[in-house]
Image 1 (cartoon, helix red, strand yellow):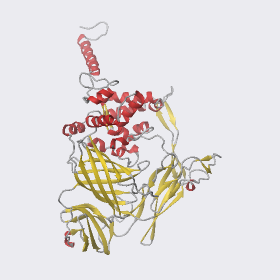
Image 2 (cartoon, one colour):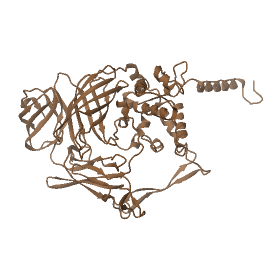
Image 3 (cartoon, helix red, strand yellow):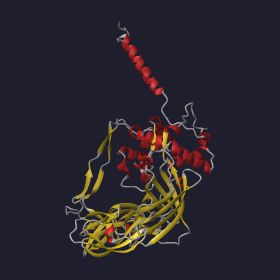
Image 4 (cartoon, helix red, strand yellow):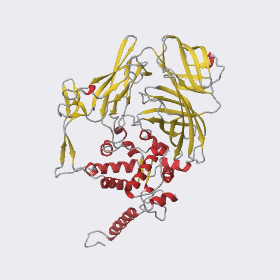
Length: 593
């Protein structure tokens, strides 16, 4: 039988109606979320975020993130919506939400640089360009990568941005005309040998999705609320048993290797610990002692602080011996290792990249004071750092690989063995293990024939003016030596890193505008590669061509390093931008208190 109005059969109409009803039911079905059952959280947040019969709390049940973002969210609720809570209550809520609605270790690792205040490479390297250009306009990409939400909550988050920051509307949904496309100005590449190279103007399809739609699609697919990683971690999450002594090995740019011990003690709170730290810098012959506290969130994520026992004397080098530093580390799944960064400074630009291993009764080799040894070397003293090292060491107990001979044990203690070594001629370039008995430090010492070149690291960086109203942001540069690898060619994948070398440092003008004079005003670099920016605010002594009034000391320059190796001068340079202070910053230091 045919319906005379629609021309469709009755069964077809029934099927279409059923499909429509199913689609509507699917849209109306409750979105899976994470129940909230913490009394204080419900008490403080429940005035606006209602809880249903299944324990689902508006917004809170549909997002997961780090302690820092939970802390920032609570601050915003107190600032804008009148939430009243004591510091102790806030800490309790942050602890609960980080455990109940946190991130799995694998999810945190994708952007741990946001937590430890380091940034490897460019932020856009970690997300598609649409996400980068849309979200990085106001804040870091790490802040985006460290959240997991439902699609519905991502859409609410976008609406929240527009409501609280109206300028986001043009960023999310740029104004469009009746044209089918519009032209983006030409992009200019680096100057080429024949002058400036330009890219032809691009055309944007005006019918394409708005940027925010692309972002929400990406986040909903790649960063959903519930993931296999979180499900697996939540099922086995437990408070780690960290009490004991830990061997510390690390590296600080400009200061070199760091070795020491961290003693962790349990407290009355299951997730909180006290610490005692002692670390030694072989290159500087400096020992630092600290005491502190640590908190573990989500069963693995350490936040801590270490303070000097007495206030250090004033120093011209803010990268050494700070009064206090903060810690962000990840505890390994077996509970016997940690890694992360300890950081300080006005912008957390100084820091130690650290690895911790739980100490038992067995010997442990952490590394050496030297980074590399040249072949041949007739006699050189080498210090091997570790823990539980035997006191009666013999040369035969120490293995540095073929062609490297320990001729004498100068001194041996449980934490360091000082030995005399000789390196035979014509050894292949490579990185050796260092072993004492069965204990081994993997890839601890490089063997090389000659230094082929140096590279300044970082190859591009940013400093900020300051000193009056705002803190200065310093930049620590290093000249790293390399040997050509087995292929004998420089700048190839098999080259061997030989460690930092004592270079001569200088600033050079990067000419980008007429009468460029940035090098006179931006700041200075010392003989250890530390760049100190100038003060902020207008400088009466500086006037740009286009403005006859005093202007700031900002600008961009080259930082040049020169190192002599075998009578050959090796050079490298880094690009440095010196800009104004960052007066508004995203940081939640309370999570380590």
